[in-house]
Image 1 (cartoon, rainbow, N blue to C red):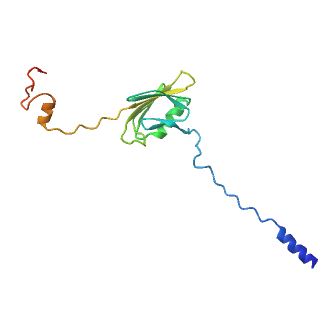
Image 2 (tube, rainbow, N blue to C red):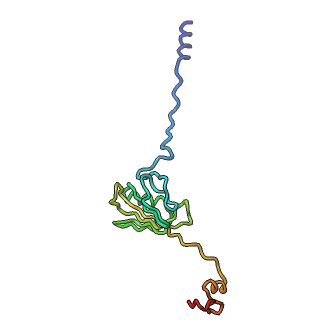
Image 3 (cartoon, rainbow, N blue to C red):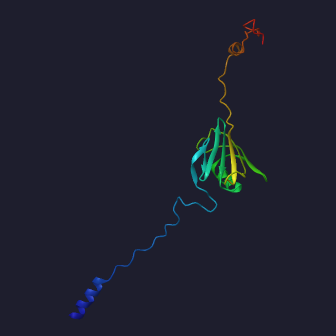
Length: 162
């Protein structure tokens, strides 16, 4: 009996096998080689890469400096815009009529160049070149009145001949 009891006790004390290891792969937020994370700032709907800063912003243009190399910044922009006509040159890369995915009605003109200022390696100018919305259609009489003329083409105000 002691052998049977020892066998039962040994079987009861065995550790269960470890669970099978599951290869989860890379996390979904893992960046591919040569890919750079997005930052918190944007220029007309184009999210800027991390380690980039806005130097100044005016009505239709944003000047950006980045620690990325010009090639890296150009590749970042290429991955973050749609429908752009790209002209790559030795001194700059230009993206014409680029569409930021977050604002599909906007059109941007983007230039990426080498920067020799501060610790920045590259600079980027983002201009909003979205055409204005079409004017509401007017009747010919309304168009003449808006121009200061009557339907016959004569000035409405004789003192204003232009």
